[in-house]
Each structure stands twice: as C-alpha cells, then as structure tokens.
Image (tube, rainbow, N blue to C red):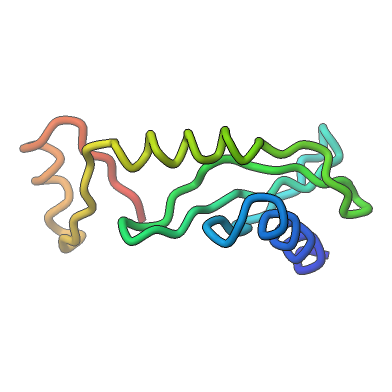
Length: 106
C-alpha cells in the first residue's frame, strides 16, 4: 500500500506543482484515517521538507498545500542562513557546547 500511496502522491505533485518537488516519507494517521506524505524539494542547496499532503485509503487527495504556498515555503527555507557540517559523532557534544543554537540530525 505504501508504494501505491507514494506513486499517487508523486504523480499528483508532478502534474500540479512540477518536477521541483517529490513525495517523501509516508505515515498513516489513524485519527484522521489518512495517509500523510511529506512533500520534498530537491535543490542544489539540499533537500527541504515543504509540508505534507494527505490521501484517503482510496488514494484520493484529501488535502495538499497550493503550489504558491509550497514555493513561498521553499523561498523562505532558501533564505534561511544555515549550513550543514559533517563532523565525527565524538565531536558533537563539544560543538554543541561551543556554538549555541546547533541542531543535530542523525
């Protein structure tokens, strides 16, 4: 079922938003009874999560941000003045102590 949901989301995004975005991780929201799919933008600056779209059990779109909203989110993320650094895991605590506001992923 995950592949079918992913393929439906990907097809919708390509047809309605364009090649810049793609479908990402999927999870089932049992309270809403929907499949939620992350919307990703692949850029030369990295991959950004722009939001989520929701599909029902029949792969019908329930909710998706508009192209304009997704582009505004992407513009804001690209203007964010942050960088990604690659450091050994053993150095993470030292870097976090030296630099306030550091977020660790992974």
